[in-house]
Amino acid sequence: MKSRYFLAAVLVAASHLAAQQPASSSPLGFTSSIPWLTQSFAWAKSQALIYSRAGSKTMGPWCEAALPGRNAFCMRDVSHQTEGAAALGLSAANRNMVGLFAQSVAKSRDWAAYWEIDGEGRPSSADYVSDNDFWFNLPANFDVLDASVRMWRWTGDETYRRDPVFRRFFRITMSDYIQSWQLTPDKILTRPRIANQRQTEGRFVHSRGIPSYTEGTKDFIFGTDLLAAEYRAIRSFNEIASANDKALAQKMQPEADAIQSLLEHVGWSEQGHHYFGIIHKDQRGSGSGDTLVLYFGAAKDPAHIRGALDYISSPTYWKKINIEEESYVPLTLFRYGRNEAAYQTLADISSPQNNRREYPEVSYAVIAAIVSGVIGLSPGPISGDYDISTISRLPTGHDQAALTRVSILQNQLDVTHTGTSTTLLKNTSGPALSWRAEFPGTLTDVKVDGKAVSAKHSTIAEGIAISWTDVTVAPGATVVVTK
Image (cartoon, rainbow, N blue to C red; front, side, top):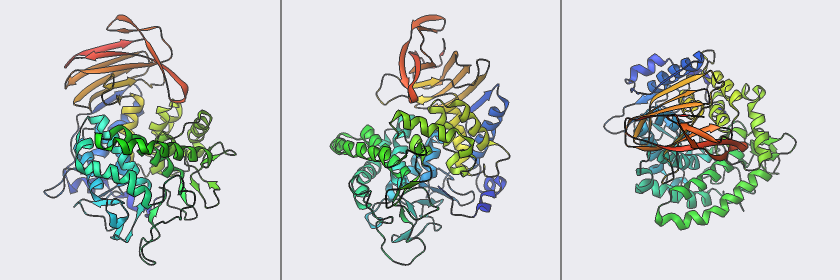
């Protein structure tokens, strides 16, 4: 995932960007007894909103999601930025951007979407010459599909499921796209690196379908991030598929299992105890793909998960990677219970000393790491037993953190944690919702507004035991749960 652009472009001043269009506003607030965490949030919110765009008569709302000043958004960056943007209340921009990508898939490009779209809604001239000559990274269709499903869960917006543009994109990605680029389990090990080269000369003819987000080398047939993204997209499609698409979704499940098996067997380094980044023609692997394998939830072998987490928890790893890749690390580590390392990398990417923190993706990743990582706020499964869940990942019992007016589903919520023992949730606006209040460890009971109730138990990522109870929170109501 190495940028091919001169890094000086990243240093475009934020004041210049702000002058292009007024920044949006957001009611989201956050404070903590940990000073640097409060400061990181304040910077990230301000920076993210600078990159938010109101749109125009010909272009709906959007956010910059490429090099600062490019006036564009690309598929990978948008897919990663959606969670932070949604928490800020920028769901209309998310829907518009992923919708434009979904709409753009075309047979003339072997069902690839436009990799990057500019502020006028056109394919960016920085990446596109013609349908035969354009830049494209193959995980991107899968990434956008998964981001669409995640935003469907986060917002409850049925547009993602019912709109014909999205449904067409989902079906094409699960069928024509996979076939055209030779990404089926029986072909992917023998595919050429660039599967559909239409002409011998051109700006991007050797980049028309890079089989990874890794861009710095050309001697490989696919990246493990491609396997991970494909696996996750198939699983996500199964979740969102409409009645007419259920047969296709079920048909794809054995392919997901086969792709995941390749990831564990071909993509795993027995010597290095982590996932390779890329796989060469002789099936030899090199580099590291651990962050995105874990980010997409594609690792299943418990020993492999532990090895990959150990690998990306080490400063030896995250101090040598670029800011784009590192921006995935904090939230990924939080979700797998590696909280200490998550805080270290969160501090690193948001530090004023990090001269690339102005890359748009970083500020949105910081917001997501605080909202979904530190506060542990997540949407529940659609039509499931609960609407949202929380779990504190504060470092000590003395720490406090308060998230205010976070946008999720049709609600705005306030969530306050004291250590990992007390959580307050206020339903500041929106309908009643079911809240799953989670706590680390195995508890006999928890207290809801002082009244003891029996705790229920689950095991989440990397075998972490949690205890929980479900509580209905009425509009305007505040509920406190303690362990």
